[in-house]
Image 1 (tube, rainbow, N blue to C red):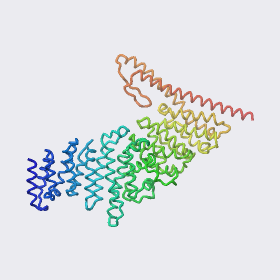
Image 2: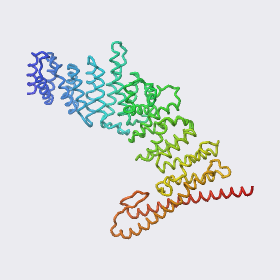
Image 3: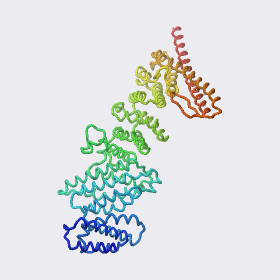
Image 4: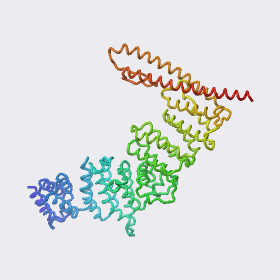
Length: 597
């Protein structure tokens, strides 16, 4: 029945000129053709399509059959003669139909599916789509751009495989699509670099479209993509995709060194205004991804000029590292840490000049590392962040370390981080004692730094439990200084400032400890009394620790928390007592020496 309907419509149209075809004819042809396909009459439809008498009709109306043919191929994935005929029908339509109409029909098909059908559809229509675009007589650049943008938008919906197993399984087909997309794009790259004079303007437009596609691809999927080990690089589809994308950039006249080292510069060396205007908003992720691919994965790294110094490379990769570390996704954060590590490991210790800290990213990156260390829920990344901050500190010269310490003490707002910085200050002072004296960690400069360390932010009212790590680190530093630096030598300037230290730190700490211990002892007493009353009801209750209420805690656990707090105060008190004892011994010894003189 469907075949007869189609033949009837075709007979009617055979006696008409192409310009005389009506909208009704298109609709009837589409409905009848779709019925033929759905009812399995593909053989008869092939005969009709191949008939020379129907050439004009198929050229004008046949593109409407692309959708039904592709859908049947997606539904019927078993290899058989009928499936072969569907492919033959698809090839015939691509060969015979108007390429402009076919282009729109194929792009609509690509936009339709969701989930796993996205990759299945893309893999099915990429080759026909490439052929159709190549047949277009003009405006090819626009069509290539439209096709690549549509393909990328759909691929961006697919989850990026994270592990080796996921890459090998490729459940959603992203890896296959990336490889196929490279083969789809290659002819257009070759066409764009064709130097025929009469195609210069069109080729420039084509290069622009390809450049946009490359940057989109660097952002998705390559920004979040994980790669196999170097030993398995040959079997890594995402690495292949990345390598080809970087190759495309060079081929169309935008080699990555020129792009990557332009990021963040006031004076542009990459003369591409359309992208520069949006660089910070849209291209920062793409450029960071490119930096990671080159400097961590080593893709196309041989294209870098050999004259570039490690410090120069670090200077320009820090901006890209900053982009990574501002994100919260595990895969992106880990790439930022890897990129930073690759740059720092090329640098000798104590060789990064303090002037580099005038570059914004050289201060924002360590501040971002602090956020990773304190806020990231993934332990491995927190530990890696801590290791990278220490490595970064090691690379700075003395003034750079001093400047960074001051910055982080003022901005971190985290007791554990401040304790880490104070320990680093102690290490630098120790090195100054053992080796050549360092003006940044002795005398007036050190005293200025100690003003940020040996004080309580809110005096005696400071929350000692919340600040316990910092306070313990500060006391240990003070104990070290008292032992290491005799009052008579006073290399650090500590003894000159002892009165201020006692006023701003030691005395308020004494008062705070007494208040805190009294408070927690009262809490323990109240808790024990309340527990006896509540034991019958066995209800959960809450307790206030460090100005924060911890709800629904069993009474036994409450007591453990309260006793733990008291233990912390006792520990602080014992170190404080030892510091004061050492100060007394030193001052007494100095006084006796003066009397003997």
